[in-house]
Length: 625
View (tube, rainbow, N blue to C red):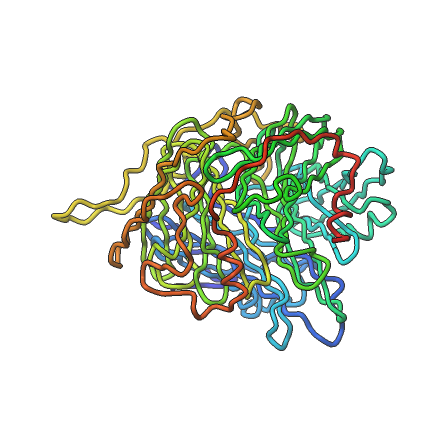
């Protein structure tokens, strides 16, 4: 791989189309990351080491030059390095190694901008370890494609072992004046005055939310970030601990730049002691919210109804609503006003005791016909090996999953997902070399997709959304020219124009004026805020879900056996297409991955209404378990 560093002549773009749209980069060519906030409770004497990696997925048939620009927290000059990412492959960039080679600070978080002349996608993987090698926590953070003038965070908590931080990055040339407003949980909670911050040009600012919100009687809190100039905002959460005050859980996510009347989730775990929650924030006007909880085969488990006051948030514990349900649960949320929704969940118990992995799952709005997963992993160190694909439409959906390894190997799987159903696909069946790789998902309709798994020896649960990209990004990807062959290739044709939903997302601020950085102004969501096709509580139909994998350099794997009800397109983690098994993985992680599988169907409980949660501090109930 070719590489240059700071103060070296900038690499020229590779031959191909120049991706510019009305003076701004095409979506998928520039990615922003706010800094990862440091754990302020780390105990002295046992140094915590933070490792951060950037996973860059290049789906183009040509090598792509990529520029990484790092912005230290304390006003140092930006640091720049370059790399050539080979055609149709996934590249790993070590942030710490770059900072060492460039003479940058290693004891502070850095914001990052990743630029390329062609469509790519980027995710950041962070891991905290002790100097003795013990893994404390790990998490995956997707990049955002543009700064924005407002960001919303539905989830947040500052009680017991929790620590919460808000990090802000200003990529603009002038100081950004930022106001942070706190979203109370419950109308009885007294308001807390907003906090105002100044973020220097090309600089950062960090807010200790626990310190700023400590006077509040209810410790659950959402955030609304407003800025006169476009910024990037991210929330970092730490939880759990030992006698040495080391946190065993961590989550770092960007906020939602837009509120929406439509949100979808997959993979809510309600098995055993797992804890899953749904948190809804109404940043502007009061909202009436309906959420349908459904099984992978589309059957309705429960109907929840919430009323969320303007500027406040509400939380419901999902596992209380569907006790006894087996397997992962999907959530379809619709509201009569724009809201922001997140789904926190914790594995096998309370996040405040012992060592329980968790994640705050970002919701998706409206679905996409083209999406990226820059980070998947089937290696022995980190596992993110399952993809959930939900079809919110009225008819069957054909999805192509294409994996890209770091060595340039590719493999393809095809899934058919019935209307209202979810397929879970084990990416190990692609037959790519074990380890990290990226994937693209392309469909003939709209879908919602998440990667599921565990990382760092089960130190962190991963449930990351596939990054939706617009149709013009798919059309801009430079395709491979097929070589002459006497045997027809099994690669599916790419649609000339991917279907697009009507954009009715409500921005949280007035339309942005022109700036030197692109500003996000819209996110596709369905044109209607009414419920989708209702799952049937008595349906026993078996969806037509299939999964077949082909590889450009490996033998074609066998097709998945015909599915049965509640066991749709399930591929066990120990049944790899290339003959590998998880026998070498720690038992705990093996069991964690297996827990995500669907189990035989049980008789679903009748749907029921659930109202008036805005006044309840359900996080307090969670923390006392």
